[in-house]
Image 1 (spheres, rainbow, N blue to C red):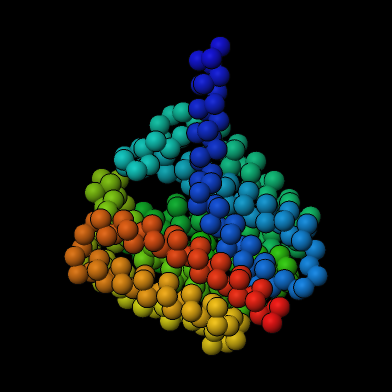
Image 2: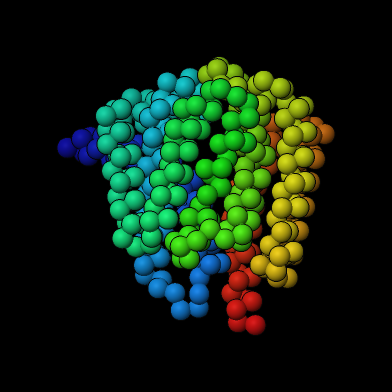
Length: 297
C-alpha cells in the first residue's frame, strides 16, 4: 500500500511539474505587477485575484503543452530528460488532458472575472508560446527566442488589460522590458547547455554562432535592457524608488554580461542566468513599490 501511494504521489508530482510552476510563479508576479500599476485606488481586488489565477492556469497549460510537444527532444537533453512526458512517467494522453484542462479553466476564469480583451490576449499568448515558438520557431532559427520572446513578455500586459480593458503605452513599456530581457536571460542558459542543444538538433545561438558571438550579443542586449528599463522614469510612469533600483540592478546585469564576454566561462553564464531571474523579479517589485510610494505621497 505504501509503495502504491508513493507511485501515485510521484505520478501526480510529475504531472504538476509539467506546468513548470517555478516559471509560472514569475509570470504571475509580473502579471500582478501590471495589475497594480494599472489599478485605481478602489479596485475590486477579489475579481482581480480570480483573473490572476486564470492567467496562471493558462500559463501552466502552455508549459505542459510545451513539454508534450518537445518530449522527444527533451529526452535527448540532460536538463530536460526527467520531465514527465520525456521519461514516460506521464503519458501523452494524460499530458494533453492536463494542458487542455488548465487552459480551458484558466480562460473561463478570465472571461468571468476580467474582460474579453484579456481572455483573447491570454489565448493568443498560449498559442504564441506553445505553438509558434515551440513548434515552429525553436527548431527553425537561432533567433527563435528573439521572435518568440513576444509571448513571454505578455504577462504584465495581461495584468494591465484585466484591470483597465485597454493596452496603454505604459503596458507596452512593461512588455518591452521583458522582451529585451528575454534573449540575454535565455542565451546565458543556452551557453552552458549548448552540448545538450546541439545533441537535440536545436539551432540555439551558441550552437550555430559559437560562444563568442553569443556573449557579445548578451552584452549588447544588456545595454539595451538598462536603457529600456529607464523608460518608466522618463515618461513619469515611475519615480525615484524605481529609478535607483533599475540603475543598480541593470548595472549588475551588465557587469555579469561583460565578465561573461571577457571569459566565456560557463560558470559565469550560469551565474548570469540565475541573476537574470532575480533581476526581473526585483525590477517589477520596484515598480510595484514605487507605485505605492507615489500614491501615498
